[in-house]
Length: 357
Image (cartoon, rainbow, N blue to C red; front, side):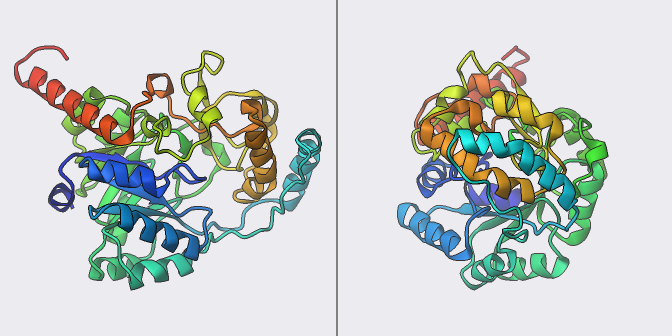
């Protein structure tokens, strides 16, 4: 896959698929046009909604792109714990004049229907989050001409990805914004996420697959570092949130560099699964009590988050961001790719000449 990915796109720069409306076709097209690999996020969309975005993206660029799918989740939430959390959120709902969502709105994210679309009308790359697809699925996508990537957050998860027959591993470090792509949600493991460079080393020694490094990467010099550590490419998410093509709200974009939001934390407050976001009031007040219940908590809080965004209130939103958020640059996405590529070249030149960079 390393040579295949290198043949597919000129630059080792992958735009992370960010569900919830951030990774829109305009963003993916701009990244792909600039020589990187743009991605659409199919998470939280219907199969038809995903298909419409793919068609829109194809109308904007003829270059390769990817689509990301969420794996269906096992039933593990305790209904009583979800009920208690819903009671705790009642005041939030009243404040934003919103109704709490139905926690039982579905847990497979339309996975089978989306796969059917992607097999019927293949795209260049498909990636998976929250688990490993079956070998049959990965083989079917390969026969369709699609490269497959699967997120892993430990060396053991990377081994599972390799054994299932995927073409590559997205190695996601603790620094990454948004949801950790753990294959199983084990509350006892909260706080044990591994930093990207350490994780890259562990995964590099465990599997023979090509690796895409994700987590806190915001500059070309950091891309050079993960390539030197054994990755074939780097995946950047937060770096693209602030671009004008991003579908993130203006409130979210401003918050990335607002001194009011000085740090990030992994929290279950918004979705019931560990995800890294800027620390705001909602996260502080509800994070300690949120149950391990995804996607139930996601469905439950969705109307509150939407109402807060509509009101322009950053304190009630899920402000997903990686640890490098203060380094965000408000550049057009294509220009950002060009700047990252120039920084990467400069870092490589400095390394090859023995200088610092």
